[in-house]
Image 1 (cartoon, each protein chain N blue to C red):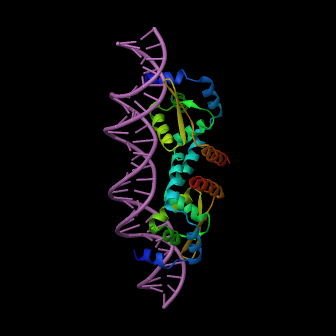
Image 2: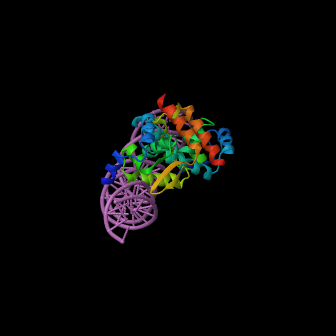
Image 3: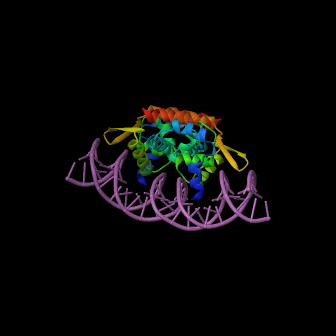
Length: 117
Length: 117
DNA sequence: TAGTCATATGAGTAAGTGTTCATATGTTCA
DNA sequence: TGAACATATGAACACTTACTCATATGACTA
C-alpha cells in the first residue's frame, strides 16, 4: 500500500505519463472495445463469424458445419446478435443469420492473415 | 440427438454449406485467432495495449495511470508477454514494457475508431 | 551489509463463461 | 388438430479468469 502511494505520486517518468494520460480515452470506450474483442475471443464464435462473413446460413447448417450442438450455436448466436455483430432473418421455421457489422470482417481478415504468417 | 443427426445429413442449404466448408480454415488457426482476441477482450489489457502503443512505460507508471495495483498490472503484463504481444526491457530495477507486435496497433486503432463512431 | 524500492509470483477467491440437458415456442404439413 | 421440425431458452455444471494478499527476487543506496 505504501508502494502504491509512491507510485501514484512519484512517477518514474512524469513526462511520458502525462503525455499518455492526455491522450487516454474514457473508460467507457475501453469497455466497449474489450466487449467487442471478447466476442471474438472464443473459437466457436470466431468460427461462426468467419462463416457468416462468407454466407448467410441457418442455425442448423452452422451447427452441422461446426459439428456442434444446435443449442450451443443458438446460445452463441444470441450473444452475437445482442452485441449487434450478427442479425437474423426468419423464413418460416428457419432462421438465417448474417453479419450485422461489416466492420468485423476487417478484424477477422486481419486476424486470419496474421495467424497464417 | 435425432435433430442433430438430421442436421448432419440433410442440410437446409447443401450448396452453401459445401461452399463455406471448402473455404474453412483449420481448427488451429481459429484457436490462435481466438486466443489473440481474448487478450484484447479485457478492459485492463486493452488499456495497457493502448498505452504501450503510445509509449514504452514501466510497470509502476502503467499501474498509476490505470489506478490499478502493481500486482494486477504485472500479472496482465506477463500474459501479454507470454503471448508475444508485449516485450520487456530491464534497466536496473525498472522494467520497461513496449509492444512486441505492431500488428496489434492496427487492431486497437480500428477498434477505437469503431467505438467512437 | 541492511534497508528500500520495483517487479514477479503463487495461492486463494469471487465472478464470469461455454457447454449440456431438458423443455418451451412457433412453424409447417398431413 | 396433431406430429415433426427448427430454433430459443433457462438451469446447472465444470472450467476459466482477474483480482487481492502475502511474499519472493533482485537491484540500488546509505
